[in-house]
Image 1 (cartoon, rainbow, N blue to C red):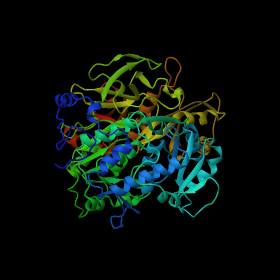
Image 2: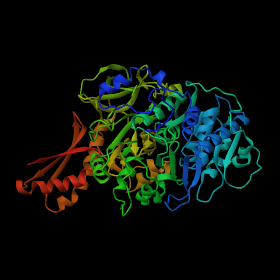
Image 3: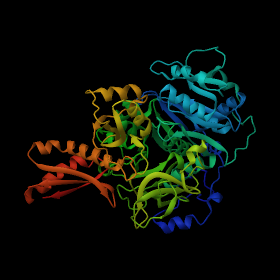
Image 4: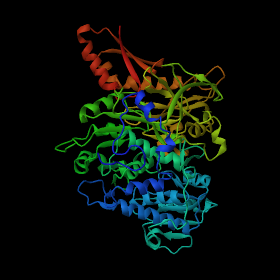
Length: 635
């Protein structure tokens, strides 16, 4: 087979097979430090381009339409533009410890900026959909020196947001804008007017980028709380590209349908850096990516035209793809379907496997592990619902910790505990030292905040969440600021925000409120109160449940697992309402389960044995799309 990429010194022309633990052990007998050939993301991209400088690195589709004429950038042109962009930042005074933040949609220039910033200083990709005050908090926490953004553009409010926050940024020296009319305002520069002045064949700074140098800050931990910035080294990020190319056996020249945002590590590292370092091509599905309705509507025609071997996105997109007619589109190029960011419902994974005839690879990781840390290896039996095994040179343990996050010991096989991870992709800490309290269960072992178990064959199963974070379609929501909004209302005694199961988004925020003794609220009063005071629309609760008493732990804290079970019971009961209306006696209870974490028990009354399979099929049809497992009990 052709050499797929130049990141590994010892793979050569043939990838190893990882059919079991023995294969991993044999591969890991060579220390990782001796395998990796690139110290930095800049070098990784340069090595990837060396496969074939004339091959396309980016094909940008303006409207995610297979009939679009792509804006095409070769690998040679790409590394040249990254180099020029790095030199532009250097000319603005950016050094290895300085931060270049950017708020950009998915434009070809956005990729130049990300990797050019890492070659010069520290990149800080920021979600442009956030509210201005959230953007300002992240930019200031990062110590932004140069801000790159989209110029005034119809249909976009990014420029207006930047103009609102620029005065709050104490370290800001320059704003570089892409697109829009010329502007001679002091401190505002046009990318297009400056980029061609820069050399394309070398870094003017002469910088030798070290593997331990900081490459980027990524914001995480929910977008409604205090900015929590994950600090990535070049070694962290290069490992992600190396591991993804290795396990999925990348070969130069392949295409990937790309619609993930660059402020998400799955988009910037698992997909963009991995593809570019492997000599592959990113088919960029418009500035909005998967948020452009055309991307999903045209999905199978895009597969037909660009012949990708992998369909990779968040579970919401994968689930929605099942409803897109294939028509005459040829989907035979697809070898894998992969998803992460939140759990893929078992029923969705099974349906995709049947529909596409491919393995469905579920990945698991977090910003703190530079994205993918475990995945379902294609050569091993895939157990739907499991997130597989660690990628080579990475480790997973299931541990017991106390209320203060202190390590108490490792869990037994199939015992549920906190998932801890170590390896070359794991970060060394948050930028703000305050956030490092409890971040590691032991040195080098990050506390994921998730609950899980390792089965007898080493497969990792995520069973719940130890932290309160709500994940809505791969988007993190911190409940605490929303709960604080409720507490500001004079009638509210206790408030808790939890994730309500949702067949599409995975979770939606649901609020439980206990009023103060004797207090009352008018219909819709609390809903309006929280809606007006919550800056992020995605974090506004989809419903508010008045409850009395609020379930509490022995030390007086809100017992959120019981609220999550109640939320699931409500959703599942509603999902089965049509069956109940037909006269079927059905009741739902949700509670803790030793293997699955949580389990919904559906009790069905007085159904003759001959009719049970049809009833069970109707129940499965309605409940299988949810992540929480269910069982049927006949009475």
